[in-house]
Image (cartoon, rainbow over all chains, first blue to last red):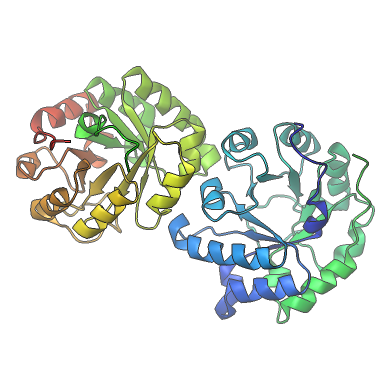
Length: 221
Length: 221
């Protein structure tokens, strides 16, 4: 697909902070996101598995405003309609969600489509069908997603990165301690739920992730 | 809103059959829907509260083909993105779903937007915001929707019908026995889940509903 410039958003994927209402607790998702943005995060992904789209829309609008104020991307999990309603930058799809090519068809050309896979061939197919970036994991076992499947480790991540030129974001069990293990995998960034949502100081945690993970140089495009 | 012709779809709403995988049982939703279409139903609404949008998409495509073959409407519950992906005629929204005006904005002009309410003022507002028709209930207590709220009866239905010129479909506890009670309420049709999905002979049940319910003449437009 030729519509896109070569990954102008790649740098913003260096740290993807995924929201979790329950883990954010009484502080509220907005407060945690605001701190993460102050800490340098430039991609926020709204993930909501319980509330209806109309119920979560006010939060989505607030996160949209917060991310715009920090020149950060705002991505919505699963629901393209919710993403369009709050003028998000894109949507992140999993294997049970709408197919990439269907979403590509209904969304504006500059709308980002992310897709989760741990398989190199599936990753290449998703990109050929219009995915702009990939989420890849589970890297290490995690409690955040009970259904996340087997852990693939840095080797599995490197295989996916090698299969595509699109940015790949590592997810699942990512901690500050493990960031050095992601070096030389080719990943553009890391995605975290637990580490930031439950942090006592989300700003400094976000900053530490950005300090601790330097993506390899982008492939020539 | 002037984009629409005066309710050309009103007649098709005379019987809205809402799907339920569990109630359809081992026969499958498609078989029940096919029978209902043969019985004369001209509006099928896909309602799926468990599966992901990608998981339900194949069924949605099949229902789309079935309904087209019978010149019937195909409406998807809640998810605009799924509705667009399977080229459905429209979406039906509840109070926890995306707001009518947001959906109106993202969908094509000829895409139907239904909205559920039991309140006349809310109904009028929804129509002014772009709803094409209304679902109104719960008419009588029902087991199909645990969260459906209080029963409004034929009087409550008539109040909503009086508040809008858009077609109003009665829902909730509708049985063949109760159809005479809906006479003179102004309703354009009735929506059923249980009565058709669990029927041993959905074709004849659908036919009986269409025989038993004659909507009042359309208001002048």
